[in-house]
Image (cartoon, rainbow, N blue to C red; front, side, top):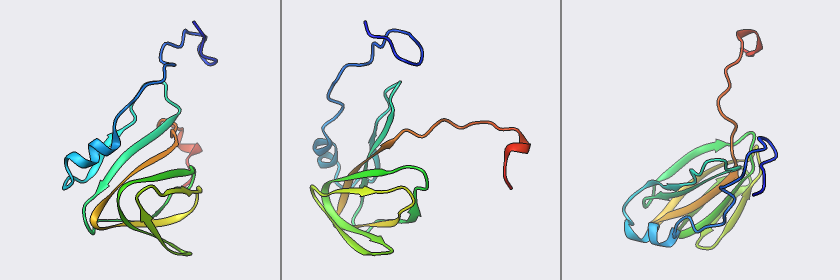
Amino acid sequence: MPETPTTGQPDEAAVARLLCDVRALTGQLPESAGVLWKLAESGRQLDANLVRLSAGERIGTHAEPDLDVLVLIVTGDGVMDTPEGAQPLTEGGLLWLPHGSTRSITAGPGGLAYVTVHRRRPGMQIRRRSDVTP
């Protein structure tokens, strides 16, 4: 059995498998909104979410300062507003959001469902007060 480089322990989780059917999840409850699924397997190096926005729902302007993000539009349509202008979001579109990029997302009249994937954020770290910048 292969060993993990960091612990030297057997790596039993290194098995490819189907995690979910995103079309089935988004098609069952078209009126539902929020995170419909998220990657939660132990030992993972990635975070991923399936998000559904109801018609006209908006995620306000924000930026991810540390991580690049991939966004795959699963169903519906909408608009991603960026400082460079509006980017139409349509089914099958794959977007790269480089770290530091600013955007907001608004769902179209039929709603919008998309998958996000990025490197896993490190866990919260407790620091000494002298290490924290005010």
